[in-house]
Image 1 (cartoon, rainbow, N blue to C red):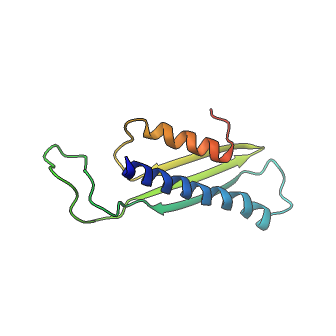
Image 2: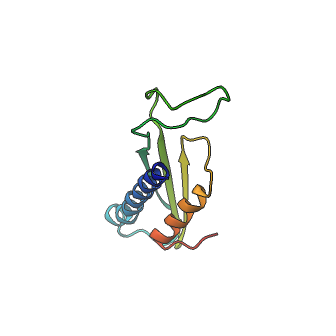
Image 3: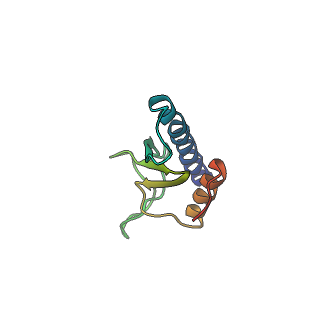
Length: 117
């Protein structure tokens, strides 16, 4: 459970940074822009586990990971136009299990006061 929480916290932290940049950058760069302008921002964060973890993908895998071949990342993009916001998050993992995706979704919605759609 701690491994899941660690990844969840890292992704929420990552989204917090992205959203903060999203809020600040258009105002600083384009103070006279109109509400009809489409604004956006992107970010990426390393989510590679620091300790060995159970791997998925091949049925013959037994035991934990044995080092890091390639780092794993989470990427996000935020769009806003006329007060409507959309967040897309992509991760280098096979899937979300046990309600993890719902936890991410709820955390992001609550943290940024988004309206779910």
